[in-house]
Amino acid sequence: MQYFRLRAYIALKLTLHRLQQAATTWPQPQDWLLAVGLTLALGLVTVPVGLQSQFLSPTVASLSWADGLRLAARVLLVPALLEEGFWRVLLLPHPTERMSDRKRWRLGLPMLGLFVVMHPLNAMTLYPMAFATFTNPVFLLSAALLGLICTFMYWRSGSLWVVTAMHWLVVVVWLLFLGGYTSLRL
Image (cartoon, rainbow, N blue to C red; front, side, top):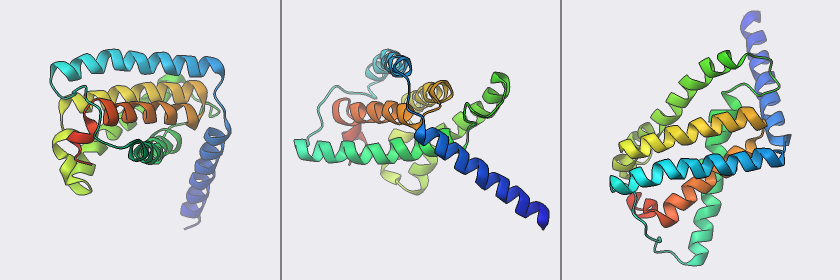
């Protein structure tokens, strides 16, 4: 019993360390620049594929400005902050944790796989109307690439804020300007 208490204490201490470090580390200007570059590169890959496959459609969502702002604020919390806080900060080692890059990626790649799989599972359990969208191969490819660049940026910056901003921007652009709002029937 003592062993399990010790393990629980260590896990709690690690979790609090990761949350505190990620929340209090502000990205350096070069981290923001790299994040912008990686997010643009993501768009250069996923937008043509999405348009070619007709998964994406360049349309402005039929929302008032106020509703668009409310949607953007909601997306900042869920999925951006919540998913990045869980999939990057809690489950991945913070840069302050001593670990080789090889070991980091051995931990990170399975978490990336689970991050991608989580979307169809959410559609099967919590949001059935999103099933067709969340199981679309282009969506899954986009989620995998977003997760990959967010993982890289988290390890590079050590900050929750840069990956949250990246995730938020990608989802908001998709929802408001590339047909995501219509495809999710929000």
